[in-house]
Image (cartoon, rainbow, N blue to C red; front, side, top):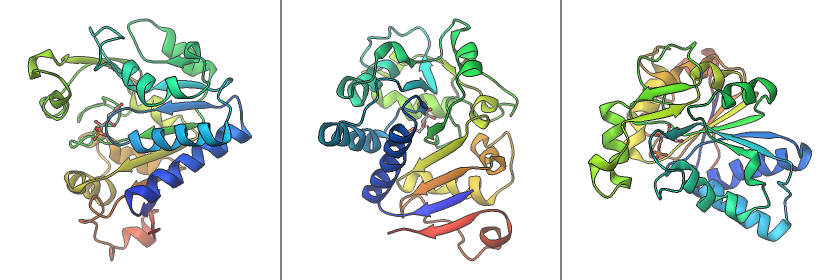
Length: 249
Ligand code: F6R
């Protein structure tokens, strides 16, 4: 695991350039995408790049990490709507190449046939990745889950009233995420500092799903200075524990 610490602007710039480079070198790449506040700046940078350089997405396929259950896909708070608004409507991707987990077996077979080249991740305040909540077995795959109280309160702000927020969602599992070639996790803001410290310095445990990423051979964690604030940068883990730390700005 590599940990890169920098400003949010630098992070959005570097991560978008990694994605653009992948799209240019592998025009048929499969991108694993996340929603939420964290990746919005990366998507804005991809849209700007597409306007300026016409980076070509017409053969690119995407699979999103998760989608609410029992919410119309055109609901303003669906993750489909989020992705259309932030990215898909502004680049030349074909909407039929963009996928979300749902009640059908489609995504499981899609993942078998289309290994994901790069997965973008955020992290929940409770350590979830996708909607794999604390306690999820590392062997889990795509499925319907009940959202934890933490997640319900974290995401209720996006709905007009908290009771409008769905209590269940479809999510890729942890084993699906671990099969991806390359993983980029971004965390920004002081509210992520505690969980980031535990993810990097604490035990690898299903109680903190993101901690399992330390077992993956190609993970880069981008942190702004607020999210990195509690890391004990003198710890041996950064030299001996397989975690490399770099300050980029
Ligand atoms: C969203 C997702 C979630 C978020 C996490 C952080 O598709 O999979 O795991 O990445 O809840 O959300 P934000 O970025 O809003 O802090």
